[in-house]
Image (cartoon, rainbow, N blue to C red; front, side, top):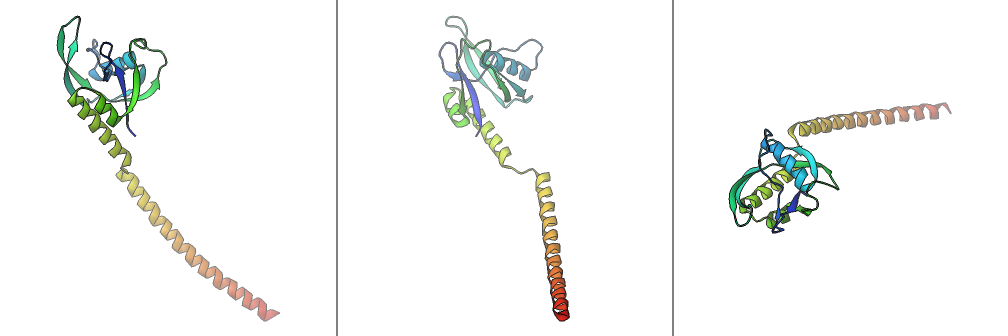
Amino acid sequence: LVEVLLIASRDTRRWLIPQGWPIGEMLPSEGAAQEAFEEAGIRGAVQSVSLGSFNYEKRLRGSTFQLCRVAVFALEVTETLEKWPEAHERERRWFPAEEAAALVGETVLCEIIRDFARDQLERATQTPTHLREVLQKIATALRRVAGLLSECEHEARWSLNQLESNWQSRT
């Protein structure tokens, strides 16, 4: 099961992903990880390649809006904090990917979440080629061992029969 952490926006309380403005000299992926910490109280390993991007209108002060482009980065969460900078301003909640996709308002973000979940599930169910080869070699070796054991069992029974025959002929 792939889960996605969503946060509630400050003003409208709609569900969205952590996002923010570019931060100084940070790479976009590093900035995304920093925003995830500040807005959702999570830390982890962020992918350096964007999953995709979408546009939305960010409400600034009053009734002013600015068109923003958001690059989306996956973050494998390793730590969830009880206290974080925006804890008093936002709710955070984990959702199954399909539910998270349905809750976010941006159509392109919805598709990014669905594609990410599908990719993660495909990776989780695939057996790597090298592992498949190793398993095939183990299976072949086990078949050989079983064959040798069968031969040994046959020879052991023959030897046991010979011993019993010799014993009975002596008595």
